[in-house]
Length: 318
Image (tube, rainbow, N blue to C red; front, top):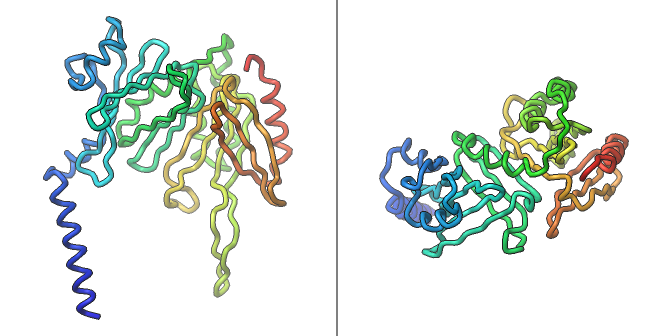
């Protein structure tokens, strides 16, 4: 047994030594900065591999808002560096894949689904839509949460494709989330920050976490989570789905982070409600190119969901 343990230990140290040799010998703070987003302010700051392509896309226009996403160089799980830029009514993504530069451009009006996620220092953004070439495509960006504010203008640009002339009172719409103060303060704060200027809240559904007992031992019950706490917000522009993060709990029942889904109303092909079993309901939101999002609800929420779907059907100019 001791010989076996010695062999395993040697193998582990060999593996660790190999990994350490592959990682750059940088201080921890410098490695962390390699996971940050970087805003480029002029062509002089654009890496050579992207410069000619970006100049061609910009067409002599003023330098666009451009963000360089990290490659996570020096980390075990590396990423492909991407240059993301806002060009008038398009979002363009340039990336160098094994020496081959690719360009993916979405017209903002053709983006059907934006996902934003945060879990401690890890953040990500996913874009689903149809590219200029007519292909349904999903692209993803990962970066350190410390710099997520640098990506915020791009997310807001994608969400602003549908613009209504209505000018609701922002104080009234923010007050619609006040009922969440006791039920889920974290989701309330997430919801308040999720609204765009001038966006009118039409309906809200809160679904608390749903758990089921998996084991009872010595008088103690052990549960697993069937459905995390989530919030569905219908506005006059989009459907916003916010879910608590899937990470570890802190401060009792509250989890780290969260995930936001932003769905323009004119890209939703249908919303349906099914009851796969006696205790749960599934609200399915269908989007172009086979994309969809399913949300689980307790049957006790059926009346609220029926009202939510009725209001969705009644929203004008979808």
